[in-house]
Image 1 (cartoon, rainbow, N blue to C red):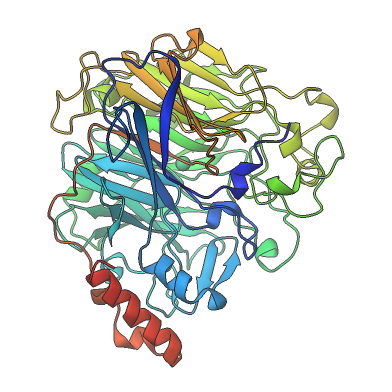
Image 2: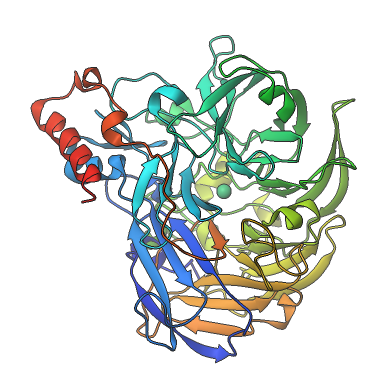
Length: 571
Ligand SMILES: [Fe+2]
């Protein structure tokens, strides 16, 4: 079966979910929060570029207006300046590989990841500043850091900046700040981008910046991670810009065999004034990866788990006319979704030696059932990040109806179609022991009709640290894994015992009227949802100069002023 058709067609909507199976765990608490693009539109080919929407599911019944036996799933479009200008002036916005360009600049769709910072909530993506949301209402509050303090990636004219960044900044629990990056075209290395580290302290509308000496590469930086003393910045390697495709031609650029990583010492950043350069240590890692997470405690070495994307090229998405592995037309509902993995995904634990510049492999998992790595769940408390015990990973299985012959042709040097599995396989939730990557427990979904997605880990008895994230036995094994399951017959929420996912869900919620939601991207767990704390936040009206409007006609100028006014007035 192709993936659920509703992945591309559903609207985000409020749902009061009901318990349909099992027993709701007594100790589970907090909020499941997820961000996603909207449904597919006609004016952009790639669904991953449409407007961001946030949804929040309370893990206790009877909140947010739901009946006492119902669980509130509440959805809201992220209506920042970009999306409001898009709504008012869609006719001047043009879809491309990096999203929508417009006379206002590059639109920030903020649709890829959500992350808490205490009681604050941020939504992120790779081509725009993080945006802050109210955790309760999910309303847009402001973008992180003024346009001027970031400086552009590409200095195009307009009220909206063009900023290449990462969808996965990190909150530093010791320094109480957010670390992220900016990528800018390299003057010295054509086709490459240079890396600048960005720091936001959360209390002002300014960020600080440090260009990283020699940190240039040809790619993108979807994830950064950290230890207590180091930032680890990595080329994703699996979403390569293709100038030919950008020019309207066919895609020919392949993902890398290996990618560079840059380790930057936090002390070097702290001892260097903003704007001045700092050094890094360069490493190479294989295969390309999208997500990697370091052990925060680096007393005994710098270690990280890598969720590799072996032959999972996220830059390839299904287009009209594409045929699937069997030679049948890709189902029209799947056009705009990304091409799924053409090899089993691998997982690796590595250790970085900053003295020698070598990466040492410590463990690996790659099996005939580890196809199409999607997203993972882990304990994000400082204690859990320092001593992780379990990594929970969702895999989508081998999906021949969602792999195109066009993609196989592009990768014919690396993939032998005759060696691909004959039958599709369902999704799997697997728990791996950190350190060895031994399979601790594994659950195969019984049907290929459903698409579980975007899990979170919920600790037992949380609230032991200042973020409220730490449970009574940190690491990722003591608590629950919550998984949204997308189906054409309605949204489900599966809850697993984090120490025994192989036993199957201990409880299941379902949409009572078959309500569906579209493709979901990253999720996170928040211990609670309370209104966002008071803080100085960036006003859109303060983020541009009148000279930024110079190239706009009167209608577009009016739209900018109208959006700025509406945002100020909370409209
Ligand atoms: Fe991601």
